[in-house]
Amino acid sequence: MNNIYKKVFIGLFVVLAMVSCARLETTSKATKTAELDMDEYSTDDEMTEATAPMDKKVKSTKKYKLRTKSYKKQNKSALKAGFADDNKQFNYFLNFLQKYENNTTRVQTNIKDRVVLTVKDSQGNTIPNATITDTSTEIQSQTYSDGTFLSFVGSRYKVSHQQTTSTIAIDKNSKTHIDIKLDTIYKPKSPMPVDIVFTFDTTGSMSEEIRRLKKTIELIYLNLSSVKTKVDVRFGMVLYKDKYDKYITKTIPLTNDLQHFQTELNKVSAGGGGDTPEDLVSALRDTTTQMRWRQDGLKLVFVITDAPPHTDYKDAKPYIYYANIAKQKAIKIHTIGTGGLNIDGEYVLRQLSQYTNGKYVFLTYGEKGESDGTAVGSVSHHTGANFTTDKLEKIVIKFVKEDIANATNSSAIDDDYFEANKIKEETKEQTMSKLFDKAFSQIVDYSSTKLDQNTLSVLPTATTNINKNLKLNAEYFGEQLLLSIKKSKTFKIVERNDIQQILNEHKLQDSGLLDETKVIKFGKLVGAEFLLMSKIYIKKERYEIYIKLVKVSTAEVVSATKIYIDKDLGI
Image 1 (cartoon, rainbow, N blue to C red):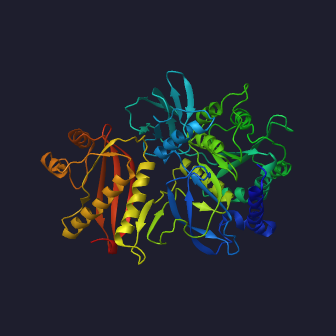
Image 2 (image 1 turned 120 degrees about the horizontal axis):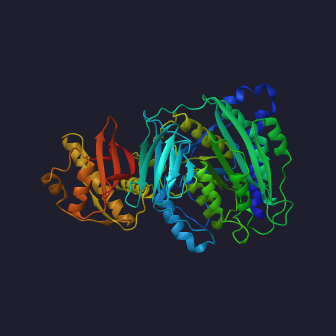
Image 3 (image 1 turned 135 degrees about the vertical axis):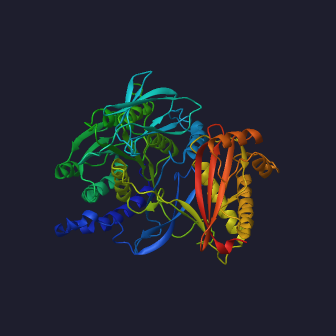
């Protein structure tokens, strides 16, 4: 783990930490930094890319081009942190697990039949910490900050909050997302209890990550204290090494005394290790069972490591055992893979995060500009769900703030879309090909159900009015979309020249919309397991196309995206 590449990483990390924390050295700034902009020292606006996963051995087909800030003096190979939400890109994650399951020594989990239950009150607000009881085992779990609970096995559940209850049965034919409404009104706690635990690998190669947390913990606290919702934040730590080191685990209990926590944090130092794997399993045990989590609050863990766990200790339970305990307690585990993490480590960290509704954070070295050689500005992906930053603490703050917003039903909706603009360096067809390739790739990756060479019927792109030019562009863009679908080879396309005729004869389509009954009927008529439906709108300066993938057997929308196209790219 201690190698030249790592030393380069460490040096750059130190520089970023010094810059990031310069303002904290003056006490007169303490109250003003409560709402500190993490990009305060940034001046250059540039295009960067986040690719998940980031391990050298794992190449992703998904790239997101985003706007982010960079320092003027920043080295072009500076630290970059990004993240992947594998519960959002669920089909992608299933393919990732399948692809590398034979190349790792990790625990395999059967999660492909995942169903997301969302508990809501009578006004449609989500309810965190509602109780979910599996009636077959009597095991009780809690919902996360956004009211969700992940079910991986068919069962019958009793859902309760305060004095109200409801029951629901889940089987292999259930929809992948189900809302459960309770006859109650959810009132967020004030102040909102927020417990944050850093589960830290403290072996020799982790010294700079520890130093960075020491320097930025006050910044994290001030930013969380600045949110509109009143919060009661507590910090704790579980430090871990390996057998035969100075200690295997060491626990610093949760406390809302920041000065006391900082004092304990300042005592932490890196050392030991030796072989590559470390005893993460013992750390997960202490994190989930020894910490005194507040049952009525938000519970977050940040696992930070550059090594996979030992899975060969005979006296230890598998790491997924403790992930299951975390899920029952609604402890969300975000995992952070630092420089040098191998595929074994990434596999485990992503499993832990997905299973507990968390995210996997990756650190890498970002190059300025675009790395794929394509022209800047033609096609871009705009999303709040994936981004890069040169500050790891910014991601920590973002995740915690998201949970606070979810728990108070004040979260903002991320506007996720693809955009295409006409540029001189590309032909119209090149831009269209790139646009629809990226958009359809996201449709596939973000499917909430497993896709495996299923049959697909592509419906004609519907229009909102009888404008002749709009109909011509609907046909043109529809053809471009179909080309991208065929290139991906994800589905077996149901080739029918009479699809529009069938829609007309059976009166199935009305302005591009099919209700649940019509979806099932049409799918059976053409012999398709999935339908791809799209609808085009015309705006002042662009076309907008909304695309959704529908599973025929349940009439459920399992994936969707939207596209904005410059009018100069139309016909």
